[in-house]
Image (cartoon, rainbow, N blue to C red; front, side, top):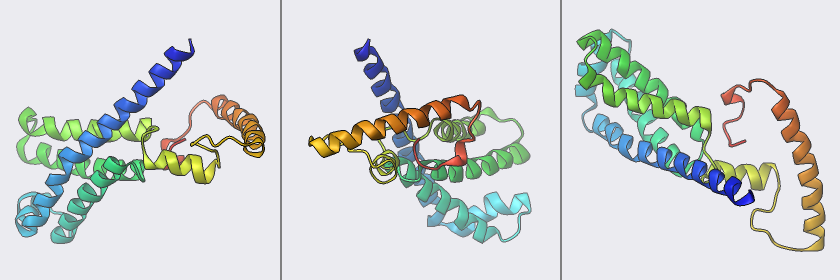
Length: 185
Protein backbone atom coordinates (compact mmCIF):
# COMPACT_ATOMS: atom_id res chain seq x y z
CA UNK A 1 0.00 0.00 0.00
CA UNK A 2 2.78 2.41 0.87
CA UNK A 3 4.48 1.77 -2.47
CA UNK A 4 1.28 2.53 -4.40
CA UNK A 5 0.86 5.84 -2.53
CA UNK A 6 4.48 6.76 -3.18
CA UNK A 7 4.20 5.66 -6.79
CA UNK A 8 1.10 7.79 -7.42
CA UNK A 9 2.63 10.82 -5.71
CA UNK A 10 5.84 10.60 -7.72
CA UNK A 11 3.93 10.16 -10.98
CA UNK A 12 1.69 13.14 -10.19
CA UNK A 13 4.64 15.37 -9.38
CA UNK A 14 6.56 14.11 -12.42
CA UNK A 15 3.54 14.87 -14.62
CA UNK A 16 3.32 18.41 -13.25
CA UNK A 17 7.06 18.85 -13.86
CA UNK A 18 6.71 17.71 -17.47
CA UNK A 19 3.73 20.04 -18.01
CA UNK A 20 5.60 22.99 -16.50
CA UNK A 21 8.86 22.46 -18.36
CA UNK A 22 7.33 21.76 -21.76
CA UNK A 23 4.91 24.67 -21.52
CA UNK A 24 7.70 27.04 -20.51
CA UNK A 25 10.23 25.76 -23.02
CA UNK A 26 7.80 25.87 -25.94
CA UNK A 27 6.33 29.27 -25.06
CA UNK A 28 9.53 31.19 -24.33
CA UNK A 29 10.49 31.65 -27.97
CA UNK A 30 7.21 33.47 -28.64
CA UNK A 31 8.28 36.16 -26.17
CA UNK A 32 11.69 36.50 -27.81
CA UNK A 33 10.04 36.75 -31.25
CA UNK A 34 7.95 39.64 -29.97
CA UNK A 35 11.06 41.42 -28.69
CA UNK A 36 12.81 40.86 -32.03
CA UNK A 37 10.39 43.24 -33.81
CA UNK A 38 8.24 44.89 -31.18
CA UNK A 39 6.77 47.55 -33.49
CA UNK A 40 5.59 44.93 -35.97
CA UNK A 41 3.94 42.98 -33.16
CA UNK A 42 2.26 46.14 -31.87
CA UNK A 43 0.95 46.98 -35.36
CA UNK A 44 -0.29 43.46 -36.08
CA UNK A 45 -1.74 42.41 -32.74
CA UNK A 46 -2.26 45.29 -30.29
CA UNK A 47 -3.41 48.20 -32.46
CA UNK A 48 -6.28 46.23 -34.10
CA UNK A 49 -7.75 45.82 -30.59
CA UNK A 50 -7.61 49.62 -30.09
CA UNK A 51 -5.77 49.24 -26.80
CA UNK A 52 -3.84 52.24 -25.45
CA UNK A 53 -0.04 52.29 -25.48
CA UNK A 54 0.42 49.44 -27.98
CA UNK A 55 4.23 49.34 -27.81
CA UNK A 56 4.21 49.29 -24.01
CA UNK A 57 1.62 46.52 -23.97
CA UNK A 58 3.70 44.61 -26.52
CA UNK A 59 6.71 44.79 -24.22
CA UNK A 60 4.48 43.67 -21.36
CA UNK A 61 3.24 40.67 -23.37
CA UNK A 62 6.80 39.69 -24.32
CA UNK A 63 8.01 40.06 -20.73
CA UNK A 64 5.13 38.01 -19.34
CA UNK A 65 5.88 35.19 -21.78
CA UNK A 66 9.63 35.21 -21.13
CA UNK A 67 9.54 35.67 -17.35
CA UNK A 68 6.48 33.42 -16.99
CA UNK A 69 8.18 30.69 -19.02
CA UNK A 70 11.34 30.82 -16.90
CA UNK A 71 9.15 30.76 -13.81
CA UNK A 72 7.49 27.57 -15.02
CA UNK A 73 10.74 25.91 -16.05
CA UNK A 74 12.51 26.61 -12.75
CA UNK A 75 9.41 26.25 -10.60
CA UNK A 76 9.96 29.53 -8.76
CA UNK A 77 6.87 31.70 -8.39
CA UNK A 78 5.13 29.17 -10.56
CA UNK A 79 1.55 30.26 -10.01
CA UNK A 80 2.48 33.90 -10.56
CA UNK A 81 4.27 33.03 -13.82
CA UNK A 82 1.35 30.89 -14.96
CA UNK A 83 -0.99 33.80 -14.17
CA UNK A 84 1.07 36.11 -16.37
CA UNK A 85 0.91 33.56 -19.19
CA UNK A 86 -2.82 33.12 -18.62
CA UNK A 87 -3.35 36.87 -19.01
CA UNK A 88 -1.36 37.02 -22.23
CA UNK A 89 -3.13 33.99 -23.68
CA UNK A 90 -6.53 35.46 -22.77
CA UNK A 91 -5.78 38.60 -24.76
CA UNK A 92 -4.35 36.51 -27.63
CA UNK A 93 -7.50 34.36 -27.76
CA UNK A 94 -9.64 37.50 -27.73
CA UNK A 95 -7.55 38.95 -30.58
CA UNK A 96 -7.89 35.75 -32.62
CA UNK A 97 -11.66 35.68 -32.13
CA UNK A 98 -12.10 39.39 -32.99
CA UNK A 99 -9.89 39.41 -36.07
CA UNK A 100 -10.51 35.93 -37.54
CA UNK A 101 -13.62 34.56 -35.90
CA UNK A 102 -13.64 30.99 -34.65
CA UNK A 103 -10.64 29.72 -36.61
CA UNK A 104 -9.52 26.50 -34.97
CA UNK A 105 -6.07 26.67 -36.57
CA UNK A 106 -5.36 29.97 -34.83
CA UNK A 107 -7.00 29.00 -31.57
CA UNK A 108 -5.58 25.52 -30.96
CA UNK A 109 -2.09 26.55 -29.80
CA UNK A 110 -3.46 29.46 -27.78
CA UNK A 111 -6.00 27.17 -26.13
CA UNK A 112 -3.29 24.64 -25.23
CA UNK A 113 -1.14 27.32 -23.58
CA UNK A 114 -4.24 28.71 -21.85
CA UNK A 115 -5.26 25.30 -20.49
CA UNK A 116 -1.69 24.53 -19.39
CA UNK A 117 -1.53 27.79 -17.44
CA UNK A 118 -4.91 27.11 -15.81
CA UNK A 119 -3.80 23.57 -14.89
CA UNK A 120 -0.55 24.78 -13.36
CA UNK A 121 -2.38 27.45 -11.35
CA UNK A 122 -4.83 24.84 -10.08
CA UNK A 123 -2.37 22.02 -9.39
CA UNK A 124 0.53 24.10 -8.13
CA UNK A 125 4.19 23.55 -8.94
CA UNK A 126 4.55 20.04 -7.51
CA UNK A 127 7.42 18.64 -5.46
CA UNK A 128 10.02 18.97 -8.21
CA UNK A 129 10.16 22.77 -8.01
CA UNK A 130 12.01 25.57 -6.29
CA UNK A 131 8.71 26.67 -4.71
CA UNK A 132 8.41 23.32 -2.93
CA UNK A 133 11.98 23.49 -1.64
CA UNK A 134 11.54 27.03 -0.39
CA UNK A 135 8.28 26.09 1.28
CA UNK A 136 9.75 23.02 2.99
CA UNK A 137 13.07 24.49 4.05
CA UNK A 138 12.27 28.10 4.91
CA UNK A 139 8.59 28.16 5.77
CA UNK A 140 7.88 24.73 7.25
CA UNK A 141 11.47 24.33 8.49
CA UNK A 142 11.55 20.61 7.87
CA UNK A 143 14.66 18.62 7.10
CA UNK A 144 14.27 17.39 3.50
CA UNK A 145 17.76 15.87 3.43
CA UNK A 146 17.09 13.65 6.42
CA UNK A 147 20.11 14.33 8.64
CA UNK A 148 19.67 12.08 11.64
CA UNK A 149 20.26 13.37 15.11
CA UNK A 150 18.27 13.00 18.29
CA UNK A 151 17.48 16.71 18.45
CA UNK A 152 16.39 16.88 14.82
CA UNK A 153 14.28 13.72 15.09
CA UNK A 154 12.51 15.11 18.18
CA UNK A 155 11.85 18.37 16.35
CA UNK A 156 10.68 16.44 13.31
CA UNK A 157 8.17 14.43 15.37
CA UNK A 158 6.85 17.66 16.91
CA UNK A 159 6.69 19.36 13.51
CA UNK A 160 4.90 16.33 12.01
CA UNK A 161 2.37 16.48 14.83
CA UNK A 162 1.69 20.18 14.16
CA UNK A 163 1.76 19.53 10.40
CA UNK A 164 -0.92 16.83 10.84
CA UNK A 165 -3.07 19.35 12.73
CA UNK A 166 -2.54 21.91 9.96
CA UNK A 167 -3.33 19.35 7.25
CA UNK A 168 -6.55 18.39 9.05
CA UNK A 169 -7.58 22.04 9.30
CA UNK A 170 -6.79 22.52 5.59
CA UNK A 171 -8.87 19.47 4.71
CA UNK A 172 -11.83 20.81 6.67
CA UNK A 173 -12.05 23.81 4.33
CA UNK A 174 -14.31 23.13 1.38
CA UNK A 175 -12.48 25.34 -1.11
CA UNK A 176 -9.17 27.18 -0.85
CA UNK A 177 -8.56 29.91 -3.41
CA UNK A 178 -5.53 28.86 -5.51
CA UNK A 179 -3.86 32.27 -5.21
CA UNK A 180 -3.82 32.22 -1.41
CA UNK A 181 -0.19 31.17 -1.63
CA UNK A 182 1.97 31.38 -4.70
CA UNK A 183 4.22 28.76 -3.15
CA UNK A 184 3.52 25.06 -3.07
CA UNK A 185 1.27 23.93 -0.28
